[in-house]
Image (cartoon, rainbow, N blue to C red; front, top):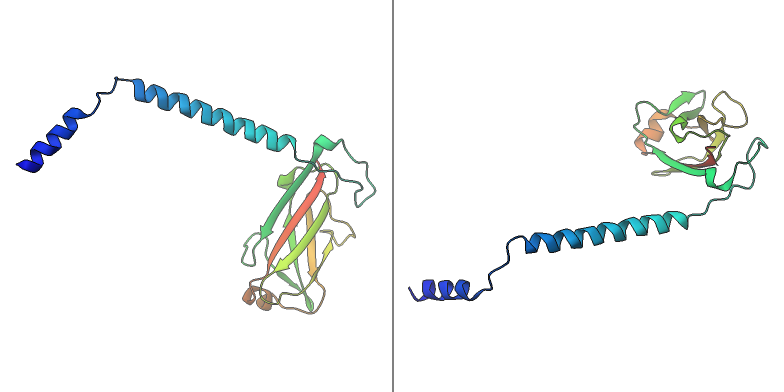
Length: 164
């Protein structure tokens, strides 16, 4: 009984809230938070800077606002973009058409895993340069598909090009 009287007394001493006031304050705070986040996004995107000095095919550079960085990872166990045997070497075709480049981008690749072999960047049709929608990598030394899969060799890539 003593405990119940203490609890009732405590609750009766609490200030009565004004109906709707708490939700109004929360709504106001939420609007300020959203405004601050939008401002942060705008400021951070305005400070991004990408300048592409030359392109692989000596093509015409676009205006700076049209420069785009697009990147991805082609995992060792990808079904659509898989390691494929080619004589004593292994290659992988990578589709970058979702980047929407209108020029051949500058592409950088690296292979990450357990003692993965080095790769060389090629064009998809065996040409020297990749095209705007795809590229291919080929192991520099002899390798097998099974060895790249067992070593979990993922291909990380970054492409910088123009979209307008």
